[in-house]
Length: 229
Image: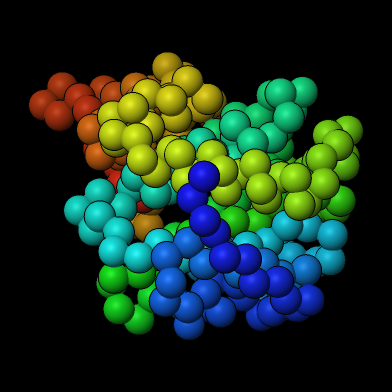
């Protein structure tokens, strides 16, 4: 098993921001709570005590295939959760249980591009009731899923270390087996546009393939966006 060095904090503004100060590969920053937790696309990740919030430092990442880390992280969490959860991945890296969001993942680079930060937040005992989210939220406790934070962290890191050794295409194959929405009609919201079509799967770099009714360009390749079923 890959050696991770875990640093525990009672409270941090953001585990991702703190992790940017660490230079060793597989440093793991864990916080009991975050006061300024961050989600994708500039959103806030509500991070009260009782959840699992951590960031992993990856040194010398493959800058041409950064999507591999997002997919591998989501796959690892999906695999680490008890089978009873029947967890599914919503592209690119949200984890849903019963169609409700239990976890989110945010990738950021440090001040220099030689370090990638993988931030993961998991609702263990509580979740935001007033939804600031695109999907309804839930927690492991709310879904009657029993696993301690230490057990989940250890299992997730073990799987992440293994999945990051796999070829990208194998990660994509495993990701698709655990994903929700493939083959279904979806809506995709982009920064300045909204698209509709069928979620065909992922391309060789982990981008979403959207089949549209455009006869000239029936397939749209999407690298960043929010999907709705």
